[in-house]
Image (cartoon, rainbow, N blue to C red):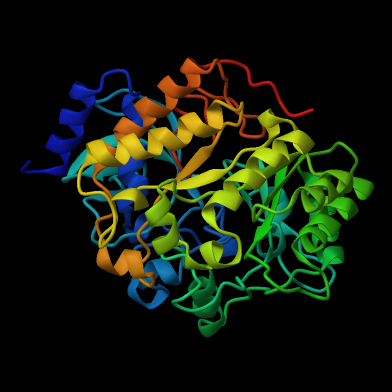
Length: 440
């Protein structure tokens, strides 16, 4: 293919049942987008909601390599509409790549657009600065630092532990830059709280609740790095769980409570439930047995793949299968040096994992892999996985859900092209446009 446009159009023609919006979204997520200075934000003093770096960098360069985008942050997300492909409203998480063939820039009238190979292909909307971001906590910290919102305001993302206790080459997941992201923000002098105080979280949520008069924020996620020992004297279930307990006591029923943590023993999972968590995300990362061992060495060492999967199934007895939603990182299946060499092999492996969990009523979801350059897999695979893999995964994902009679998982907003707000992959954009049944 001589251009990215030709590649994208070829895939849209070959896979007509995958929404065209999802093809562009996956390409932007896997390869990033460049920003003209006219499209950058004025950080927290402007009219556009800036990128919060809520857990990982999700960039194709370090902060010093991003140029002006490191000083004036790009928007948290963008919305694509219209253009020659008549795109329906599509929310895309921003992943900055100064060398991307995609570029966001303003035209002569100051209207933002997305350009591919120099041609304007969509209008671009940016998230307005929410009123709650304009207020600070009593200690001067910003709401964006303590409780940023993503998915066009749907989800409050509470990364309450900003580092991971799987540390170093022999333990860190080979695609994850959580520890580097912490280091680069501290080196740049940016506020980036390592362990968030529960009272700070509650104060930030009070501000959001007060000023989010439209009740756009519907869910919160508690997450952070894995805890193999303790943090502040608490093990993993108690550490993340005590935030949920405090939130549910202060704001009963205001938000759907979710927690992303390791696959823990059933008794620990029960503690999450007792603390008020409604949805549990024990991420399994990659399905293939060998790749799990090679790319998730800490998880393999401390828990092991088979035990991890057993714990996921056990957790369904606590939360109900529908409310157990493990994530995997879509694309690392094809990462050198150990990944599959063909799209066919990678899709077959990933589908095997989907069928395993969906046959038990558990619906995984996925994040599109961003090959961050400070990670081993990012360094070895700067282009990520082929776009064809991502498009075929969307097709296989929907088909597997239909095979087992499952519908879109709760806590992700509405499914369907033109309606979805989940921004870090296109799985919700690719599902039927139906009203979701939320968690109970």
